[in-house]
Structure formats: C-alpha cells, structure tokens
Image: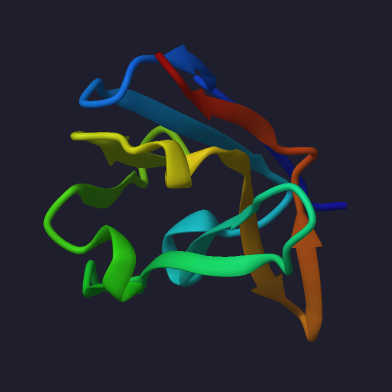
Length: 115
C-alpha cells in the first residue's frame, strides 16, 4: 500500500515562507513523478506543482517564481518550498502520486496565510 504523509503547514503572515514535506512509502519513489495539489475552501482541488523522476518541474502560473518543488530520493520525501506567501495561497495542500494505475493522496496539511 502506498502511504503519503504531509507535514509543515501552519499559520503564516503574508510575505512569509513555509516548507511542506511529504514522506512516501510503499512505492519505488525515485521512479515516480510526484505532485502537490491544493484545495481552498469552497474551491476545486488544483495542481500546484509537479516534479518528474528526472527532476523536471512545472508549476501553475499563480505560484511561479514563489514556489519550488523538490525531492530527496534517498529519503523518499517530496518538498514544496513556498515564499512570499499570499492570502490566496490559503488551502489544504496534498501530496499525490499515480502508481500502478491508481491515484494516491495524503491527508493534507493546512496552510493559512493571514495577518
């Protein structure tokens, strides 16, 4: 079974920074593309960033230049470094992987950006 456990969320002031982590188990982590999604209250879940097995990354337009996705294959861990946070970044952030034809999700970590 694939398990994804997110951590690192919290309350931060506008302009602040956070680093989210996602610990993965039950899969050959290094061969999988990994994703961060987020879901704001009352909105659809949206893809924030993707990193391929070779380290290529892609971002949704609203976070480009402020967010960096990275991975540590030795630790089976995915990261999302977020800077210059804005109130509109407030959401629950989810780690995601597609493996063996199935989508797996963590339980999420909540990020609140507020003064």
